[in-house]
Each structure stands twice: as structure tokens, then as C-alpha cells.
Image 1 (cartoon, rainbow, N blue to C red):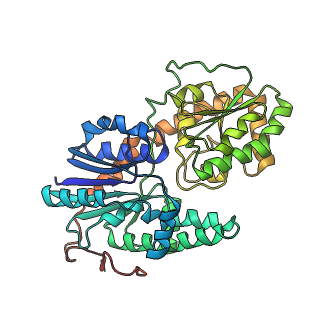
Image 2 (cartoon, rainbow, N blue to C red; image 1 turned 180 degrees about the vertical axis):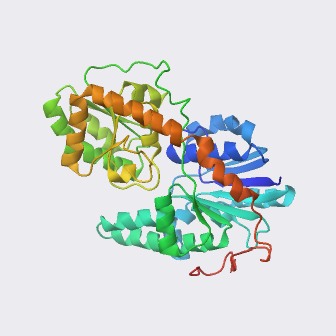
Length: 416
């Protein structure tokens, strides 16, 4: 089988946040039957010493450092009439690496992880193109615009519009477009009319996330409510702030010793400020998130804006914790009633209090949740459909660089 060029917007190791977890397991799965060449960005100095962890799965690795976007990034995006998201991930060293690998290696498939990486495709690729959008970024920015004031509402609407055109163009040109849930795939089909759109769901490593293992104890008394996530990511920031403002005070009235732990790297100043409130802990980066999940009375996922399948929810379920989730956080997860889904502050608080007051019920719900993810969400099962997509040959009737009658680099079409 031919080689695969895997382009990722973030180095998929260590797999310690949602996008990196999915990319890591995709890379490992692809490496079973293919030589894989990785080209990826790094934006966290802590990731750089660990890149050798990908050696078992990659024939070659090119990691390029990416600085955080600046005001100049936005100015260039305006001048170029391009999405800020694409300009922020434009780098000549990545383009040189891609061009060199396509010249030197027998690349049969270009696998793009995140739409920002599609800008590195050649104008007329002779290879099969698989585009893993994961989530629909344009829909995320459209949602941001709805709740924003000027001028940010205009900024988000502009980004949403330009990204939608980019997503449509890339999807029409790719041999397959992947999304993390059927709900996300259906939304994309509805807004773009793009063909060859598939759902490849996230899985969970239930051997790694196994509550039967021994974990480091977490100091402190009182029931512990745990939220996990990258804490400079806007939906996570909004989720913990909403819970701290709208729900947790009520929990503390009924359980004065209750604690709310916000567990995850890079907390913003706004998140760190929440630790000044009684009962709220902000950990920053931790050696092992499983220590906190194992100690949790409940896992909470109060996301008000979410796209695709939430790894934080699957991880809580795998650790046999009762999970209280918003509808947005639960969307796309086939939980068969093993999640407690609650919408709005009153209902969310009711659900948390009900489980805190009935620990046996919470334990039983957690056990059912773990059984559900074991049966439904193993990575091997979730990624099996990917093999069929790779085995299918590119359309023999189209000339190189054309997919579904669309040439890469042309104006965004309405495909159907």
C-alpha cells in the first residue's frame, strides 16, 4: 500500500487534549497498514520534547513551531481577504516540507487533519485526499457572532462566511470529508451540499481510562465535581464560568463542603480568578487527569457551545463516573441513557443535587456509563470505517487534481 502524508494543525503527541487525542489515534490506526509521514505544527513548548513518542507510527516527522497569532495576523487576513484561521496557520516551512515529501516519497493519500491544513495541498494533487474537518469551524464562528457585540460580531461573521466558502471548496475537492459525529456531518451536508461526507466518531481507550487502577489521591474533604479541558479554549471558559455563576452557588447551599475542580492546562486570567470563590479549584496542567476523575463524585460538562463528540464526556464515562452534561455536550454521543442530560441552570443544578444526595444512584449510573463506552466506543470499532475509505480508489474518470468535477484552487462551488 502507498504511503500517507498526514498534515496536522497541532502535533498529535502527547494525546492530552481533544484534537490531539483524535489525531493520535487516527495516526496510530493508519500506521498499521501504511508508512505515514507526519508534518505538523507545535504551539506548546512542552510538546516539543515528546515528539519521539510518535516514532513507532511515523516514517518521517517534520514539526514546525507556530507562534501565537498577533494583530498583524488579523491585518494580513483582511488585506488578503482570507479567514484569520488560515492565515494563522500559513507557514513556508510547512509548504516546503509538503512539497519535498510529495517529490521524494510514494505518497498515495494526503490526510488532512483540520481544514487549516488544506492550504498546503498542491493545485492538482495526484493523490487521494481525505479531509478530516473534525468539527464545522464555520458553524462555531457563526455561533460566536450570535452572542457577540460590535465589532467582534462582525469579525466572527466574517470568519464564519469565509470559512464556509473554504470548507465547501475543500469538501467538493476531496475524495472524502470526515466529521466527528453524524449530527455534525448532517449539518455540513445541509449548509454546503458537499458530496462524500462521512462520520468517523471518536473513541476512548478504556484500558487507559480504567477506574480499577490505582491513582494518586486528591487532598480535601467534601464531594468533588470535576470539569476537564483546555482552559484557554473559549467554550470551556464559558462553560466553567456559567457553572460557577449559575449553578455552583446553589450546590454549595445544599452541600457547603462541595468543591468544583477546573482541571486543565493554560487557564486564562478569568478562569484563574474563579479560584478566589469558595470551593472552586483551578489546577492548571496536571500530571494525570485520571487522578481527578477517579476522585470525582460527579463529572460535569456544562458546555453551552460544543461541536462534535466531547472527549471529556467519554473520559468521565470510561472512568465510571456519573456525568451531568448539557445537551450541547451530550450531542453526538450514543449514551443510551447512561448520561444525565440537563438543560438550563435550574435543571442542571437539580441533576447534580439529585446525584449528590443519592450516591448509590450515581455509582450505578457511572458503572452503566463505563459499560456503554466499552461496548460502543472502542477506537478500533470507531475507526474501522476509515479502512474502507482508504481502500476505495480515487475516481478513475477524473483527471489528477479533480474530485467530483471540481479542481482545487478554483472558486467555491455549490456542489450537489
